[in-house]
Length: 209
Image (cartoon, rainbow, N blue to C red; front, side):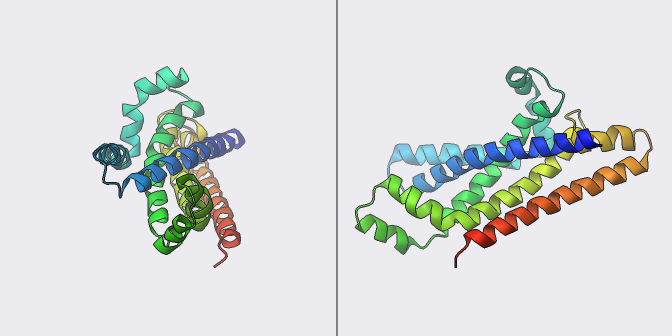
């Protein structure tokens, strides 16, 4: 049980780190290309939006199966916690990207215009206006995404990815041992509570409004 708990936490934390970076980049790209009049930029926005929408729409359990060949090439195996990482990241990053894009769009446009009027470059606007102003929403979004990832790790465990989901399925369900299933479920719920608390705590201290 202890080993399975650690595997679930490890898969979740590693996935969150990569998803936070990749999702923020995709969300920023969607935001920056959404209002351009350039044909090439509009095409880029359409391509990125299509990627985000497609992978956000595929059910996770199906995505795992579809990515098995790529997982074998990237990770060298399709079994164990490491093998679950590509599916976890590709499923969650598009979801978080939409949250990031929405957070940027909710910023008061007057703040951005004021920064532009003072001669700020686009990179300065991104790092000194967009990111600081949207940080509470970004942290809240990654909290929601991390909780979804915990649920995904349980589903991934059902096909051999390890963690509490794998333990609950093999040693609990298939062995008709309801105690194992119940304990694994309780631990997953506790992990969710911890991540939610940490996220709420961070948002409360970041949001100065």
